[in-house]
Image (cartoon, rainbow, N blue to C red; front, side):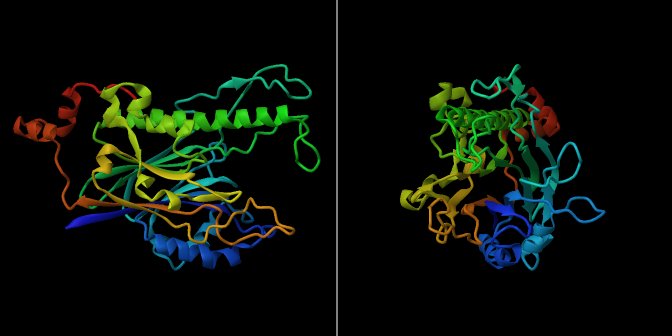
Length: 360
């Protein structure tokens, strides 16, 4: 018997109960709930989960709780990102990991491994006198999930900065259009700094996981806001073609959607063109158990198109992505562990005497 493992990622697109949102949460829940049920996920990574205020109480994920009612996910283990300042969930853009299986530990990372770079805007009006820190605001969420066979999967949930330009003072008109092309260009440049900064911090985290265990089972999931051949994803993948170092081959992260036929390989529609912005990247050891990917894009709408009167849809503007794995019923022992057992050494001591692997 094998252990089935379905890992999914889904950007829910501003999951909130605000009255000014169209359509409202009550209209969205029946549609989104059916999408979640279809995922049949054992581990589910969610993005754009908003927090709700309740009088006299902390911010809670009430909208998400309502969505998950009467679904298998209602009873799943749950971890979420926390605002470091308030120690509560944030009002906007929370990341959530739901798991059928035990979550051993979890953490979040925001400038833990990559401090905010300082940058002085060159087009700002009035001119900036000093370089200011550029923060990417959204943390990385990491959880260690233990499967029934004792194997542990490191799940990383990401939401990288979008291409939407960062605001540049003095360059926006009242209708939110841009006064100058140079201001818009600098806004795009700063957004790309944030996106690549998040990718860098993610890659450093992956390297540390490999330092702890060269055979780590790692899945990096989320809305990357980029396609596979763009810089941020290449930074996370760490392909040998880029590093030029075959010693790092076991540290490469592999995109699972490659086996989806190209005409169907898109999770987002923009101006009539399909883009694959949502990804699940896995380590080589995880790839050994990989069986296939699904992209549920049959009812995806193009929200970028200009209509005489804009239409708002209850679905998300992103399609969910699912990677399917089949793992052995019993954990496969590594050769080093078997050698250590024969020598009477505990596993952690065996790892300690192994030759260090180069850091990614």
